[in-house]
Length: 253
Image 1: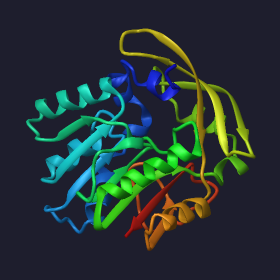
Image 2: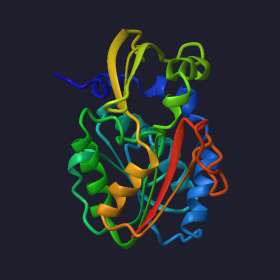
Image 3: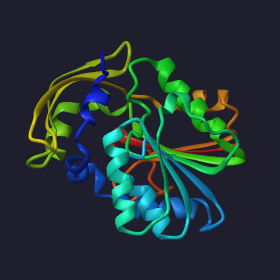
Image 4: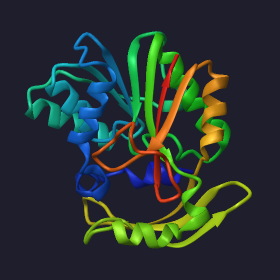
């Protein structure tokens, strides 16, 4: 049986590109460039790359990028967009829980819940962090965003998602947040690129900063920083608060 995140991204590539959360690419890539000191020799791995928006933008700027995603439909769209822009990007269908890379990249990114933290168990989410770590060179850096577990303690996830949604995009209801597991369960309604309406039972893991720090320390990252993640405007100046729906994590080996 397919998991919700596999069903969600079947024939959803064009609709995905219209979702509000995809609109911050330029600013996010500006930040990524700063974090690698504009080093054009850096090799970048984009995990859970979706339709390749960060990969495409970084390749335009002259970086060598490999993008991986579990969804055949999203990778197909990413390849089409790269061809249209005449960009050379290595897009591959890969499961982030079983990546084939080892000691190859200077930077790994997972932006906008790219794979992590969508998995159905904490162990699977940890596998993704393990594989991202293994893909990095000895002095590599990992940058990712993930759901901020402090947010649902003070706010309604349902209200936040309803406010962020635009006409034609995914809608969410029947949200319940489990305090024992820090998982939000909801029903997500989408209409795919072929006009099929789908109702998916989703389940996403929210993490608190101390958990992320501990997980990364166990993977031998020594320098770990966590900030608030503002769409299209990542910054080391944004201290994480309970108002931030997502957190931005920067970890260096």
